[in-house]
Image (cartoon, rainbow, N blue to C red; front, side, top):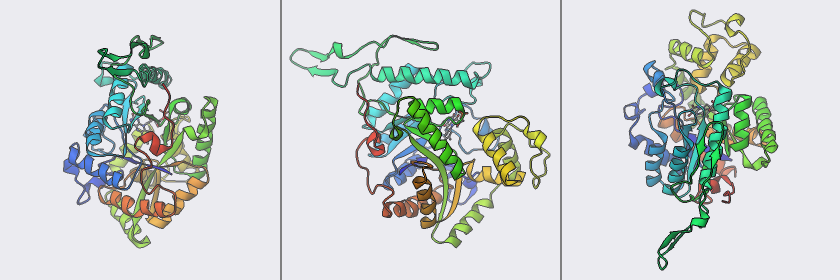
Length: 428
Ligand SMILES: Cc1cc2nc3c(=O)[nH]c(=O)nc-3n(C[C@H](O)[C@H](O)[C@H](O)COP(=O)(O)O)c2cc1C
């Protein structure tokens, strides 16, 4: 299995930061980030994954989970210097950046980290008001821009041959100019003429991650994603998603092993079953149903105010079918399983639509192995339910269980993230 860690330093379970010992005062500072990254590295987790958003609205609304407390590239560069093996995947939006900047930053992070960099390519749902824009471009346009953006970045990463630097002291020639070329890209969104300002990086191409779940988003992931992140609470649907992504990737000429599909999992690991149930009770005790109502409402774009918590959401509030992932997921849960608004808020609070499992390490490992063997995934992205205890239990109880059963490596096999993932290094 591939295992990565989502750096939710508030804890993924909403309001779990209010539990004693959470280190909530330290969010945004580096020591907490580094401690968590090192805990993951000690457990041989393949990579940490740092999300990003370019608005502060959620925090101001009282919803601090998923906020971008750490700017990914600067934070991961610092982390690179204080860790040695773990992969460093950071998010950067193609809507609010330019390919030349992005290519330089990830190339540089790859050099600094000795080949451990990864880029989570997102198109962003919001952020326009902070960038002098009068609205967000439609999803289809954002993804067209993202596709061209990644193409340009990859061309730039390839603009230096691996052996371009000769550092020939006798002739006084540092660079073999024939081994560097201008990319001359002229497209719908970008005109980039030159070559990169720095040499090819250890991985050649830093690892690309993508998490689109709409048809257009999945198409981008299938074409460019090495890692595919996804929220899948249901095994049958996870298998269908997995097959679809692998088929779409094949349509882009890629092998099945070229994309690594990682659903998120919130694992509440206890020493015993009773202990796990007690931990879930502890987490459920901090649920804020009124904040949860507005958070869920935003996630599915429905006004949930004044609805009874113990009734299902009325059909007229759902309106026409929408095809974005959280809407589809929650509507299915509501209609197929008859969940009430309270149930949906609890689900969203616990897991934001990812799989939520509580039990002993052996029980959770059984469930993970079952998904893996059933063709539902190639591994998982751990969303730590709370920090630091919830993550510690994952690293010290669950990961060793997977290692003992031969489903996770006992140590890093190589030095670069591509090597950890079993992905080839692209030739120049
Ligand atoms: C695990 C995971 C992490 C994500 N991280 C981010 C992020 O950091 N920033 C962001 O703007 N979007 C993030 N997204 C949203 C996706 O990029 C994507 O927009 C979303 O899954 C909906 O898919 P769609 O854009 O194809 O509709 C994430 C999604 C998932 C499943």
